[in-house]
Image (tube, one colour):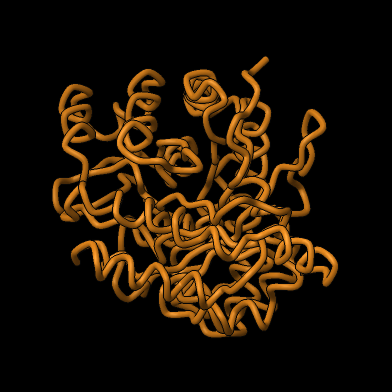
Length: 366
């Protein structure tokens, strides 16, 4: 159905198979730092129109690949597509981020929510297939979703939040209501991600953007538990190929062992976690993705290359590392600077992937 994949470096690294050099992609690599993205968004009229039109979604997904030698493309969409499909009325206000016309604050609100299916988000599935064909096998396509906890924060708060007071009040005061909401979201996310696989996604990432605002026990109960439910329900092999899954909890470095035990193929690290320490703790069981500070891209070429080398040497030799930012690229980054990072990763990464090192890595089960 789809063209043969020419560059599988990203997928191989996620599966800890030998590679010629460290692969690299960037979270939010299609976005506001690119002038061509801003032009596309203006043509579409608004952000949601950009997401819901498969031609526009394909256009902006491919824009960074035309500038940089990236090893993966990521579907252009938004993490709040599921709450929108549930009828909450997603909209965006300039300078204020996403908002919902309807919030979830009590049992009746939760009971009224439907569990969504892939068919409820057909425009996303259409975009995935369109993008996969347009890539023509150049690099793999990553599908994604927000985690149930992260989606719930927006639904209960009504948008972005600094203190999460409404959802945390629900968590402590009426935990059974929140568990019902999270279960519906986990079912919806599972169907959504499986739909993306069937539509053409070759890897998946679960963005647990707000898991790090929880205490340890609350993270286990209200975030990680539901991500495990999703992982248990995902299609992990499709058309003879493994579909790698990356689990990314921002500010979740203290829980890496627990995260790895849920069964992902890789863990995403933000820049606050030392990658050498992370590999020592869990690198035998999962691949690692990350984790340079996105603000490094404000610096010049020499500084960027130095910081790239620090991350590469921190991970060390052998496969199982996908280079990425510790979170999304900032909108005010000079578009020339990501090229310095990407080129440096490919050039400097080669010495960490000689056949000697990768064969030893395989023998040691790393």
